[in-house]
Length: 75
Image (cartoon, rainbow, N blue to C red; front, side):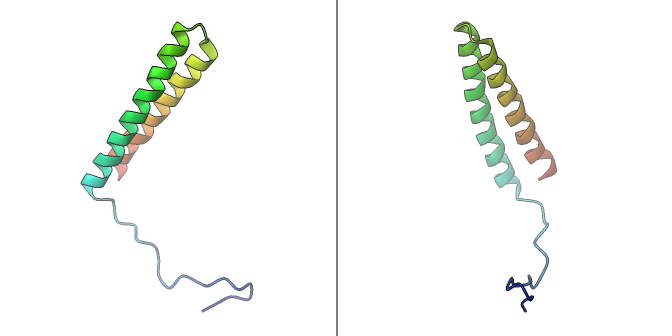
């Protein structure tokens, strides 16, 4: 099936099942590693006298932890 603009129509709806638990845990662990790197950047920046970079690193750390937590909870 195709439309007038040449794009094909999907035959069925996308799969909306939750991801397996092992996959969610794996992605959350990757998020923890990335958050640790952002936290290291934040601490190093504050120690080096760069408060703007420190705040940006801390915000990045919190955002990654938030998304990792959502990955575990919502799937």
